[in-house]
Image 1 (cartoon, rainbow, N blue to C red):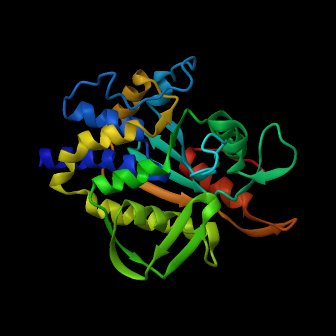
Image 2: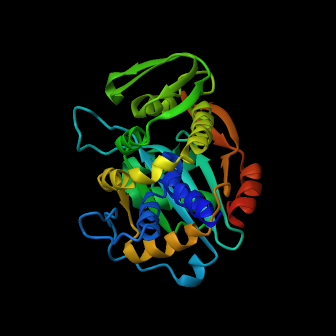
Length: 316
């Protein structure tokens, strides 16, 4: 029984490393290494520290609740690979060590918010485009009025490659999905029905947003994918794939957590159970303003949700 519980916890870490939207990748991989008693070396480190001057978060804060901003990047301009990129998925993961839970709030990329230093309202995915991780963190902090202790930025290619390493996922595609956008290097062609999706197809499924629900439908599909993946994670063969997962993830993950921070976060994650994840989406509705489509947050409902998920936050 003890081995079974430990194995489920290890797979929870694998689960986090895959979900773009909830991939605490650095802490997850560090936890993998710790649980299988394999030393971390410079060659296998998953951390690409973008802010070495950042002070460590006090232990008393980490012992209560830690909030991590998860950012999934789009593919950018295929003709200019060095141009700025936008965030294609934005989530805040909150680890509550006292209640042994992880709350995950999805923020639609078209959410209408104020970006610090810029006049007027903008789509929240512009924050990363304008100012990278720091501005994305500052925007979410100002919007939700909660602390953001760390960020994790993950490239789409990591999502695709890791799903392939795990052997794909069985999923019911609710309707035909067809979309082409050469500018975004995006080609989506999926047929309706139950099927096995490899990494490429899974990436198409969670990124599709061209139906009547737009970005909101995509967030719902991401959560459906999350549940389907979770049902398939508890397989004995998964543990054998950890070295390949670590190697792949190390190429595509950027975070401001150093190894000391990762160790503290990993210790918190070890106590979580496989069913400890609770996911919600930012409340709101569609809005068209100056010919631009937005997701307009319902600030009253957001206040209530943030209070329950993060213990306080956003004000009108």
